[in-house]
Length: 155
Image 1 (cartoon, rainbow, N blue to C red):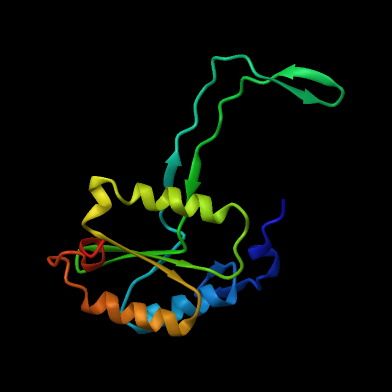
Image 2: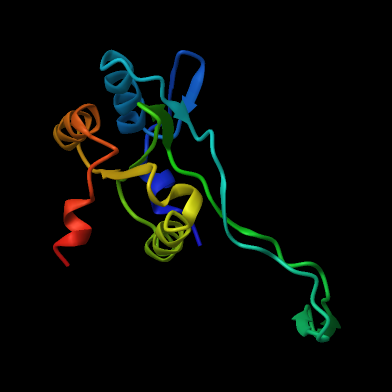
């Protein structure tokens, strides 16, 4: 299945970085202008570890059933932008059109961020527009890592 997000996007090169879309390039420029040092697709998170199967698995290849015991590959997630600000890992995912897999992988990614190493030291943003990015920049710059997460305590 084709990735509609990539199919409909216009690639752009800025500062020798090949962005998949114009909005990603624009977000990058805004982050730079705001004093951040964003890294494009610089971190990869493993959502689910692949494995070497032991149960024989037969699948169709051409007209025949064949044994397929190849290692299953990891399911990974690479956010668009990551950077450290005041000791906090900031992750920004820029969204245009979503493909059918994104909602599932994003939920799995959010679960990974609940692990101890990320839980109290990470901010995650999903950006759909430059206006929203500007609001997020304001949140990042005013964020106090020592305060309790107000949204979590209100649940």
